[in-house]
Amino acid sequence: MAETAKILNPHRIVVVPDREAGCSLVDSCPADQVRAYKKLHPDDAIVSYINTSAEVKAESDIICTSRNAVQVVNSIPAGKPILFLPDINLGNYVKKQTGRENMKIWQGACVVHATFSARRLLSARAQHPAALLAAHPECPPEILKSADFIGSTSAIIDWCIHHDADEFIIMTESGVSHSLQQRAPHKKYHFVPNEYCNCSECPYMKRNTLEKLRDCLRSLEPRVELSPEIMERARIPIERMLALR
Ligand code: SF4
Image (cartoon, rainbow, N blue to C red):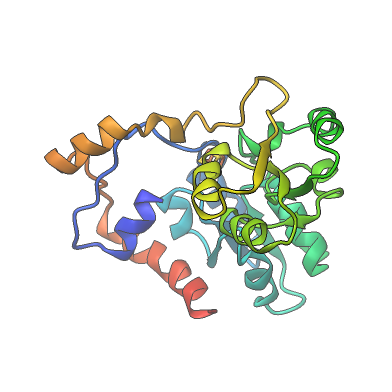
């Protein structure tokens, strides 16, 4: 995200609270592997999720977010082979929604969403039988198939606050609870822990603490620095996505 901010604002200073606050999706999709794939499949359109490195964006034809991924894939001419990267669950969801048979999907995963399990969901449903289920499309198919709503983080927030119901099971990173509590504090939100621990927090995002945020704003360090060539190439697929609005 910080790299995308820099790509779109190349002449401004962009700082991050913690340079190590990465993302498992970025780690699962190295740029040299994407370049190797392109050599073997030069006709494929590369659709990259926003959670990729600047270098991978520079190799891409168009970028998408979890909110617009279906629209972005539908914007590609029918019959054109597609590689969707890097999230396997989001890719499978988009493939199902668009019916694009000629779409290959990278095998990357989000460490939070991919570890949600049907077992933990069943337990949450037993504890909160009246609650509706809202899930992010990075969740595994066994979660998505029983969801009352599937959408991006911001779409989940909108859906919960505008829905007549007042109790929800939420399957996405639990940081979203702050926005939900702020915007509709009278409703109940139950966050399901992932299969391997008792939380649904992203260990990468949690490296960004309030103290580090204060420090980086004071010192304007550490800065996001990218080569002008990478920024120029990565800006093109981002602007293609923005032009679809
Ligand atoms: S929750 Fe963490 S690992 Fe998952 S996509 Fe977001 S930053 Fe990446």
